[in-house]
Image 1 (tube, rainbow, N blue to C red):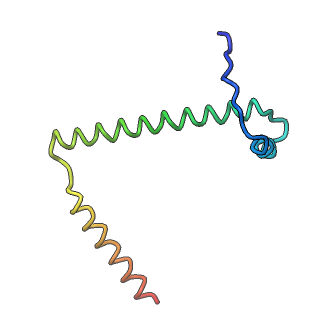
Image 2 (tube, one colour; image 1 turned 120 degrees about the vertical axis):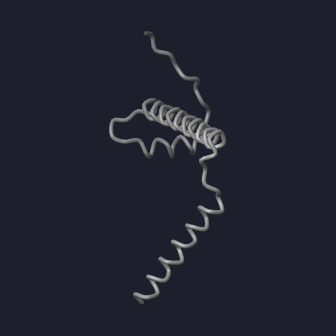
Length: 92
């Protein structure tokens, strides 16, 4: 498979100096940019998958009715927080 190039990007000269200042030994600007693009692509794929799974879980909960009301979850968390605060006060 042949390689392809990404479009060149224009940046302010000050930013280029900033980028070049963080390059590791032997790292080229091209490699740095490629790595940044790869990381961003992976992050966006992960975000999309996270959202897909979340939406699927919401739909499944609605379909089955097996969810827990937000008020119940918050009430349980408040109780845990209050208990932790009491334990901390008792130690001091």
